[in-house]
Image 1 (spheres, rainbow, N blue to C red):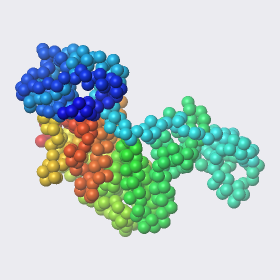
Image 2 (image 1 turned 120 degrees about the vertical axis):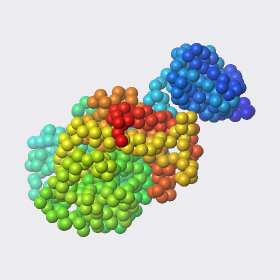
Image 3 (image 1 turned 90 degrees about the vertical axis):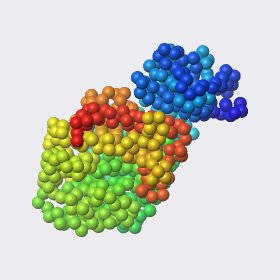
Image 4 (image 1 turned 180 degrees about the vertical axis):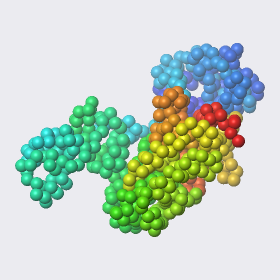
Length: 602
């Protein structure tokens, strides 16, 4: 290996790329190349570490309490902690003849004087995991990741009292060159549309108080909010501007046009397309636009949880539009349309199977909804929403029933160990209302939590599903791939399912009504079910798995391959992140097994 190749290898290992050219030259002059035969003990509690090792070829195993903890291979490095703290509880043993670089202890400790190097090696798992992600996305680093509302231009607010005349309010608006008039005491605003409809085309006099035409609700964000969150609020609330507050006081107005110019983002175009759609044909091209939007956001390094929230918001708009096309207005307020699965959890990436249901008001003939719901599912298929393989759709009478019938169903679920019933319960636990009388779902959720109070036996039988699929990581920390899937691994079965379902079971036990996995984890931490460190590890691991899965979905040619990942297609940093995440999944499985006493469940 040439000197240039050696330098490139060192630079490819985080955090050494943070060194200046001079510091890197100095380090290269001090690095030695060493060779160790198989079974050589390098570090242990009784054998002090003498160097920081970077593997060129070979393999090293780390044991903790005589159990295999990690395997280090080509390009991996170890063990900074034993050098920094001058002690270790691990044993590092050569398992394949080893050729490696050595940075001697004193030279490594000198490197630690560099704050960037020091900051990385002194971090815990969570912080180190986050920094690796940032390093991986550094070439794509954009304002999406860090920009807050305080970083963008805000328009001067025009604030008037409720009794101010329309004429005087307009005069003030003109002076301040504001786009809206804010009636703060009413939490309302007056837009150009209000003035056109109620003054120019209506019969309201300009001498009348402004409160008489202030009917549009005030939507606000804080200056500390991320700009991407402001975009989410605008999309969800279907508004073109938001009022900005600082310490509770209105300081400006953020316009959608300014925000979109800042991001050069096209999510608003998708939303406008949906709003303007008159027929199902008008919605057919939107799936392609959504995929392009997701690809753009992923490329720009936006966190996957924000992408999925935006996708869910846009999909909700599609559902509402199609629902209104199929259901007569007189029936629309006598039911609640709900989504479940990843859509219910606001975790949908690209298109996934439909998971939806209908709750019909008691006393209303359910047959009135049969034809509209069959048409509804048919339309969704036309515009690119695949059918659910388990037939969890409103076209299925099982998932289209009255409020009282759902209560009877919940009572059945809470009194049986039947796997099919418990699976349906798991599906329903992620339900989120999209349109109609959402109080129906709120009441059913409350009833469900009441029925499951102190039912540890049922919870344990639900939770055992967490162990159904093996985590695709061997005891030697190598990825376990499946030949039938062309040497790929299933990232959903192998990682995400255990996290999502385990957290769902804990949420049911502790009466947590949030459906989003990350929000459930935060609530479990707040209730003391798990400590903050473990909760943070779970969130970081879930985020990593979701992000890698989303990129896999973007590259797959059909829905059957959406979860199949070729580990060899990943860069080294991504592989390290994925391995770390799978280790946390295994740690979580042990937590669930202990918590629900799964060794007792048959």
